[in-house]
Amino acid sequence: MNPSEPLHNDAEPVAARSTVPIWLIMLCAGIFYWAALFLSDNAGGFSAEVYAPFQSYEQVSAANPQNPEMKMEAEGRKIFEATCAACHQSTGLGKEGTAPPLAGSEWLQADGGDRVIHIVLNGLTGPITVKGQQWNLSMVPWRDTFTDEQIAAVLTYERSHFDNHASPITPAMVKLARAQSHPAPETEAELLKLPLKP
Image (cartoon, rainbow, N blue to C red; front, side, top):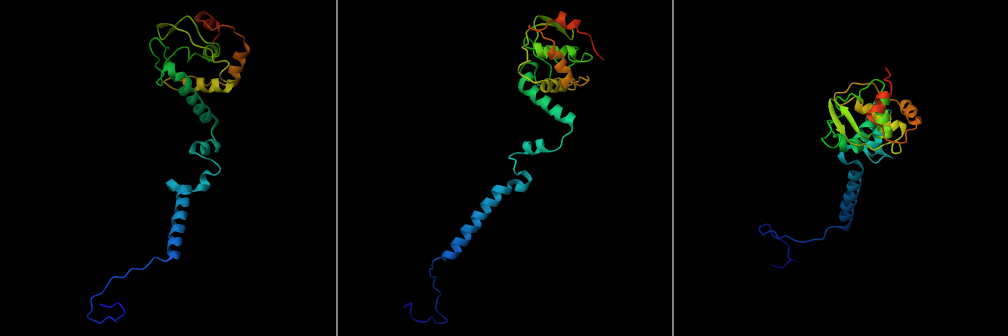
């Protein structure tokens, strides 16, 4: 059949080929590029304006107004998990041969918190009785590692968790204890000389 001849009504149809117009290719490419940018900025159903100029949910949360007690607890938890939990365990139950328990510890819950502040600032050495069990271990001082605010935060966290129900520790309390120079780690005998403060 000659392609130049007109088709008759009874002729069988023939498929022909033609190129896609360049404008249609460019339009599809443009739509695809725009969609990729949109998904990049708004993935997960969040508008980019929610985060700008922040890069994460944590940064947004930190920039929002916060209850001071909740902020202190969050800071205390962060320090505890990064530092204290390695020895005292994340449960606060301690570990035989490593560190005594914080849960239910009479040292941690003592009125005023002065004794435990001195332990964290100056470290601890020699035997000490915790919950009726004697421990003979050493704890390093954290005086030069953490600020007064950080020590207050972690002790407040420990004194209000692990079934402990003791009053908060303030940075001013830590500052006062820090001013009392102590060149060596604390001992149980020295700690017991510190008066309990209601």
